[in-house]
Each structure stands twice: as structure tokens, then as C-alpha cells.
Image (tube, rainbow, N blue to C red; front, side, top):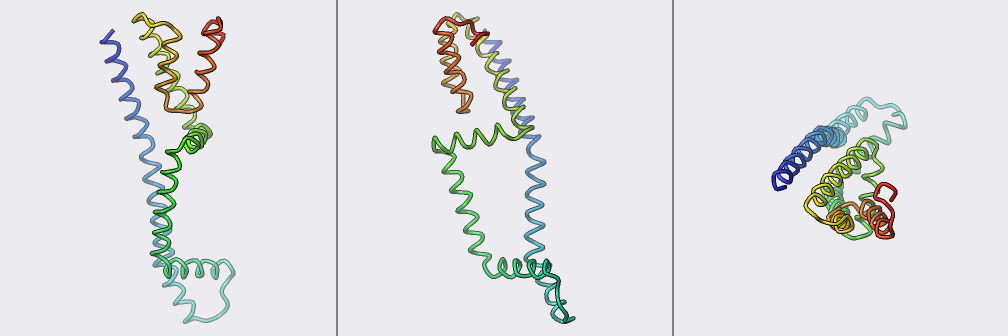
Length: 176
């Protein structure tokens, strides 16, 4: 039984490593894109604005908007940075509350590609855990209690709470 648990822990660690690896590239691209936009707004547009002032003439509306955004960003860079830090900090603190955890779990389960990975990973892990627990002599209701207690997703915990209730009422696990 301990060998099975060890194998399961190794598989879970490998899956986590693969998921982190798969999410690293999109995160890197996002950071680079934000950096490029910040560089454009901070350095390129002000330089181009000076050129347009020298040339004279009427600028198109979109260019005027871009210059106005650039001027605002360069004039208020400290406030924008502090606001971004406060926003990120507030989001992190919110996600630590019960309501925020539910919101985060809902968002995760509504992202198409990530949704499938999260659901399949949870179901595979849950099936292995229940099989190991039952193989070790734990009752199905106690095994479901452990699944509920160890689930970090609010929606999965609620679903398995209903399953546990149905199994306690006499339904088969496959029917619950």
C-alpha cells in the first residue's frame, strides 16, 4: 500500500510540474507584451509626439488618444505603479476569503483549456485516493469525507458533499 501511495505522489508531482511548465510560456508572453506596451507608451509615443509637434498639422483622433494616454502614464507613473500593486494585493487578499475562493474557483473552471485539465486531474486523483483508501480498509463514506476535506476547489467539495450524502442514503457511488 505504501508503494502505491509513493507512486501516486510521484505521479501527482509530475503532473504539477507539467502544468506549471505549460503555464510558464503564456505567463512569459504576457509579461513581455505588457512590458512592450509600457515601453511604447513611456518612450516611443512621447518621442513621436515631439516629431509630430515639429512637423505640425492635424493628428488623427487615434493618435491624439494615444498621445494623451502616454502623457497621462508618464506624468503619473508612480501613482499607476502603486495602484497596480494595490490592485494585485487586493485581489490576492480577496482570493483568500471564502467568497473570493469561490470566485477564483469559478473563474478557473470557466477557462476552456484549464477547466479540462483541472477537472480531469481532480477526478483522476480522487479515483486513485478512493481506491487506495478502500483497499486499505476505509469505508466509502469515510473515503468521501477525506476527499471533501482535502479538496481545494469549492465546487468539487460541494459536489462530493452531495455524493457523500447520496451514498449515506443508500445509493451506489456510481448512481450518486
